[in-house]
Every structure is written in C-alpha cells, then in structure tokens.
Length: 167
Image 1 (cartoon, rainbow, N blue to C red):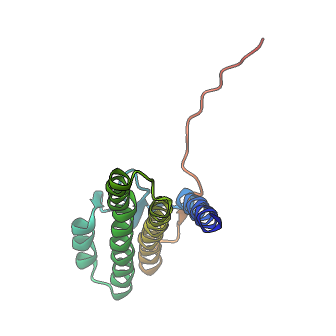
Image 2: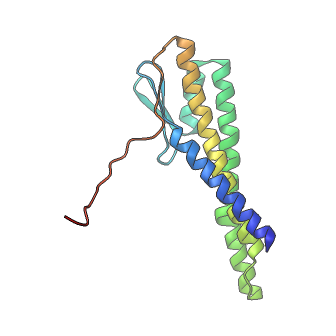
Image 3: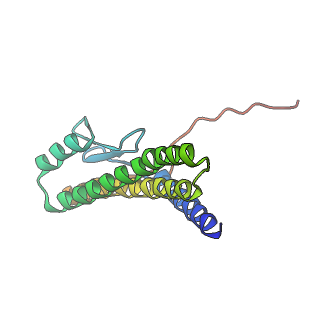
C-alpha cells in the first residue's frame, strides 16, 4: 500500500511540474519563428505558415538546415516518441489488461492501476519536455538571425467572467 501511495505522490508531482512548465511555453517573434502552445499538438509559425506534426516540422527544419536546430528537433522527436509510447501504455494497454485480469480473477489489480497512472504522468512530463525543445529552437533561431525583440509571455491570456452573488 505504501508503494502505491508513493507512486501516486510521484505522479501528482510530475503532473504539477508539467503544468507549470506548460504555462510558460509561449514565444512570439514577428520576424523569426514563433512557438505556438499546444491545443492538441505543438507547432511553429515560420513565414506566416503553421508547422504542426512531425512531418511538417521535419520539412521546416530541413529547410532551415542548421545543425543546432536539427539537434533541438532530434531531442523533440525522441521525447515525443517516448511520451507517446508511455502515454498509450499507461492510458490504454494497462487498463485493458486490468479489465481482463479483473474479469478472470474477480479482483482489481491495483499495481496495474498505479503503474498505469505513473506511466501516463511520465508520458505527460516528457511531452512537455518535447515542447520545450521546440521553444528553444525558436529562441535560438531568432538569436542567430539577430532578432532582438524576444517576447516571452509567461501565461496565456484568458478571459474570465465574474458573477456577483450579492448587491
């Protein structure tokens, strides 16, 4: 039971750290590359075109043909691929396995549930790390090209509605 609680605490810590990093991931450059925070997948804007997904980002980095940018892209792909595998395993494969085990034995395997949550949390954390490498690539390219107006926005702007409860 203690191991399950430790695993849950680690998952919560990874998730909160990933959310803090994700709130800081936004970068805009009028002339260079802009990093677009992910709605479903992260992307880069270059010369007015949006590059989203590994194939389009690969085409962009091949077009720019810079060794450091390619290094950032390789790190992005490595983290993204590992994150996708861990997330799939944690969110789909292990829960399905748990259902089949529970159907045969009549018991829920809590170790599989804890492992599933842990793998999903680590996958989310690696996803954020992958996004961070795209952000680094955008900042590096602008620095290399001499664009000095770096606009890091710590949080995305949000619209809130307040409903007064009294007079």
